[in-house]
Image 1 (tube, rainbow, N blue to C red):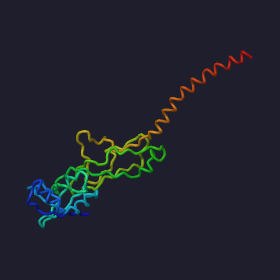
Image 2 (image 1 turned 180 degrees about the vertical axis):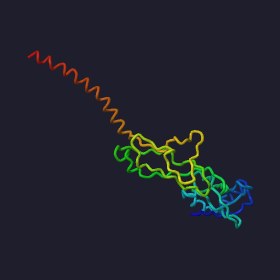
Image 3 (image 1 turned 180 degrees about the horizontal axis):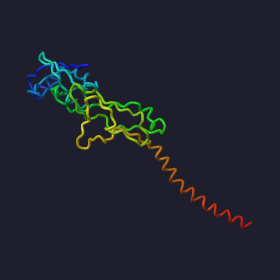
Image 4 (image 1 turned 45 degrees about the horizontal axis):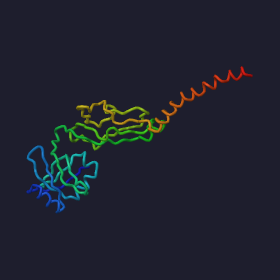
Length: 223
């Protein structure tokens, strides 16, 4: 599904101009990459509602500008500190023939039937909620699926375990490697505390039983 965003060329710039633009229900922005940067503005209601859709953040968008359509990606946006108001938005042009580097969301499934949860009472911990990937624009997925169906207590799913869509690779750089943990099943804190209490109580119970055992032979001799 193609997501289209409508924009107009913005001739004025600066803090005062941007403030006046926002008062008219428009949002200042810029589109850059693959040519000259252009100052644009967008209807606030349109961009506000589209920003609420997850797919808008990880899709190749169609920017309708000056009667022409061009593929772009959302690169950044700024919200007002306490109002539900978009302050600024940045788009980057996309070369459909070149691989791109982008973060996509992770969608977790089958957490309820994971052995670590269903049989052991564990709790799923999401170490990552998005993944860096590289791919051609035509292969860009809206999300990567993470299947938790076989995850046991104390075990983890790593980046290397994920099933990538065709043409998509995990981007490895710095500490982000194929061995990075995506999700794990942890023992609930309450269960850990109960186990620790039981272990601490065991030696005390043994120590209490020893004097009683020693007293039994003495009682028999007294008789």
